[in-house]
Amino acid sequence: WSFPQNIENPWSRINYEFWKSWEFRKFLKFRAAFKIWIVENSENFEITKYLLEKGADINAKTVAKKSALQFAANFGKEETVKYIVGHCKATHLVQFVAADGFTPMLGAAEMGYLGIVKYLLQNGATIHDTTSQSETPLICAAAIGKVEVVKWLLNEAGAGVTLPHKNVDGSTAILYSC
Image (cartoon, rainbow, N blue to C red; front, side, top):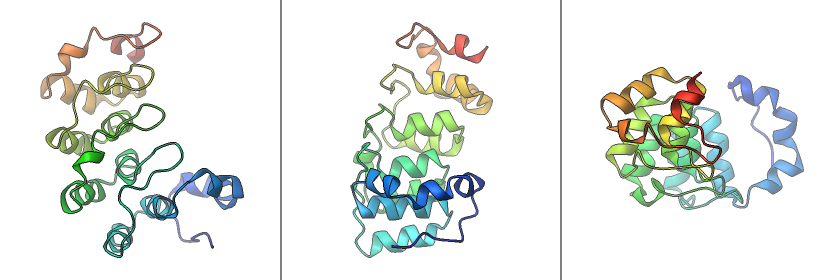
């Protein structure tokens, strides 16, 4: 096993030593999920597509129950999200909940990837998804300051009905936005 040297993501360079470590490799249960995760961080859609065409398991999950779709949504890889959901017919992964309670929709909303949020909503995600801390996509986006996602969720997706929703500590989207 060797670690790819050409990753351009600044975050990945900071954590290079951790990525090389045995602890990190042990953390991932399936090698296919690991390969797809590395590819997502290297921003190379063609490799992801090729791995899937060659039989990488689209349903593989890490021990934290993260799927390739969740990694793609969390890292803003819209082309990969569309490929996994559309071409691979993996719509069942749209609502898959990881161990931390996050769905791909929640991750995309929190990170501010509006195109992915829209696409996931068109393919089975809902504005009512909640994390294990009972945070909705609106709360996730407001907490991180993702203005475009907050506005779109409220104006276009009907998320106004989730405005009074409180997470486990009683906070709402407005409290997180301050």
